[in-house]
Length: 63
Image (cartoon, helix red, strand yellow):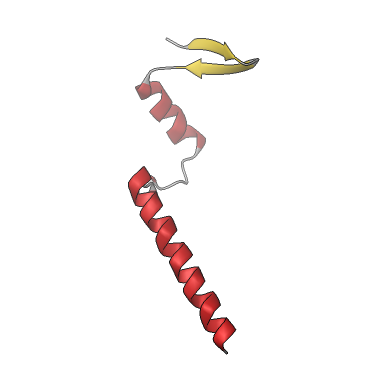
């Protein structure tokens, strides 16, 4: 059962999770779902990347 909702002149579709998962697999079969992160994991990963970038940038400025 698919439902359509209009919010602020934008159309959205509401569908059961099982249908969503099957559509997601069909739409992007090359995406490895094991690489998906939770929100907390993505925040930690982002902070680690920013710290790595800042460290590299500070090393370049010292030279």
